[in-house]
Figure (spheres, rainbow, N blue to C red):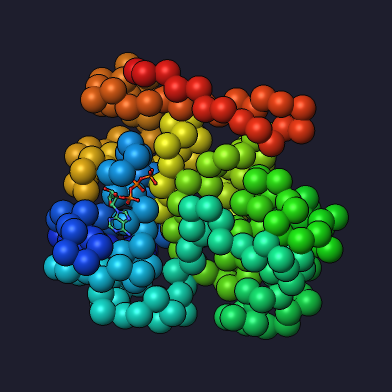
Length: 262
Ligand SMILES: Nc1ncnc2c1ncn2[C@@H]1O[C@H](COP(=O)(O)OP(=O)(O)OP(=O)(O)O)[C@@H](O)[C@H]1O
């Protein structure tokens, strides 16, 4: 059976004001597919997600979503078509409780019964259930990341843009995040565009990984190629940091990044 194309970028250029960042990006993501974008700091990963979401203008080229040319659509119209965005740094409301954060997301764009939707989300994110009355700002980094994802799902997207979901979170929650994303993808058939610097996480989840260098896609690895360590090392021969996150400190929230150059 032919897979449905969700997102298509054709020769997209974008940037900030007169500063060009993305040059000629071609990209397809199908339903039920996770496409990872790997790249060093400053290569344009966040810019790419912002351009897809409409936070930045597309200077040339086109962006199509579900057979609709959305190149000139504002962000809220893209969200209504089904594109969900979890920004780097999570973007939750720190002064609102977990429950209020979820309710706010529902009021913004949720459909159906609010109570049913929250119950569904809490069954998907059991860790959040016991934190319902806690303020967002008092959650650990990993819990905030789960909340950010849960909030995004309250708006029933069918496509997710995820910007470094493992940044600053401890390994146990990274695993939980990976399991949740795979589970959601399998159940809802999401397309996911995932930006990461954590190679192990991106390799575990992605069906394909693209490398972004200075605003251009310079290569692609399939799922089977991703498990071929030698090939990956050759492919990332420009010295990419293979990064694993280790947790130090008793409260489990301090962390340091251990990078091993490949
Ligand atoms: N608001 C801005 N105005 C001008 N230039 C910007 C702005 N934000 C980012 N840039 C520049 O755009 C380029 C790409 O940045 P971007 O944040 O997309 O990189 P990234 O690959 O996501 O990096 P990181 O992994 O550090 O988040 C960088 O050179 C950055 O300095």
